[in-house]
Length: 360
Image (tube, rainbow, N blue to C red; front, side, top):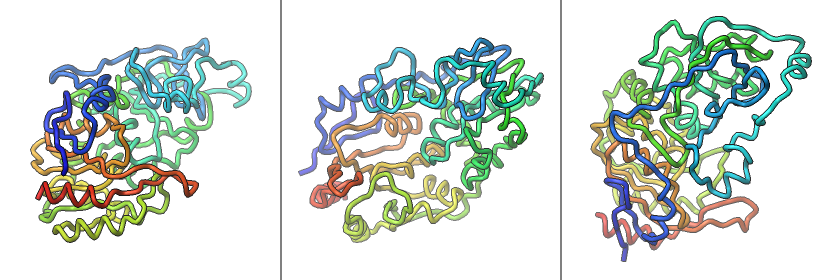
């Protein structure tokens, strides 16, 4: 028997087979900002960027708070796993203090850009983190003057801008690219405007967090509609952080219910955006593919079914759903295992069947 209860503090989100008290503790730090409240704009003078570092620095070598590649809301507790990955704001590539003289000597000089810049943070090659973290400052792209030079940090490789989904988004938003020499030397920017991230990892979301995603969506042709419910499979991913053990069994269950099984990595981003705007139901195990929901129009009336493999539920997808307004069921139907030497999810096939029987 599947129990389905509202997620505390999140409209249109429901929890299936979860302990309500534990979930309330897990989500207690999450915050949905009121409509009309926008992130802040910060302005700095004489700011330094150093190759390989994913933050900006003051002239004396101190890192500038708020310019981290992955931004946590100040004074918010972080999870132990985040602390283990990095002692400082999950941004281990950027120390709190650097030696400016040594860095400039090592690179044999530096560049100066007198033109004011609009700082968007760092490109990350990870699809989900690009849509949430790398695009989290792009809300300012539409509203700020065009004479501000738009700057992303390539973080070690300018080729990141050539990754297909990043290139597609850059083209739709007319962002352009950095001059190659900027990635090879320390750079002093005379004036930098830094937008506060509208999506702050796991903890806070502003109503305009999906502004750049919707700008991309408006540039995509939605002539072909997805009329069947869809199951998003992870089984054909070449590089997987989490395998779904025997996912073919799960696929078969959904096929028997009339779902079409789709492999997101085999589709263009344009086609994925169409599916996330037209499919009546989208189902699958929680993962990066569901960050594409940021491209769903606010008028999208479909439903989502996100299957999880553990008791802890990240606020990440709940925050996205909160500003979008579509209905989402979070279904605990599995467990994590590392017995094979890699992290994988062991699906609870009976729990999935029971949920679908109660739902349809």
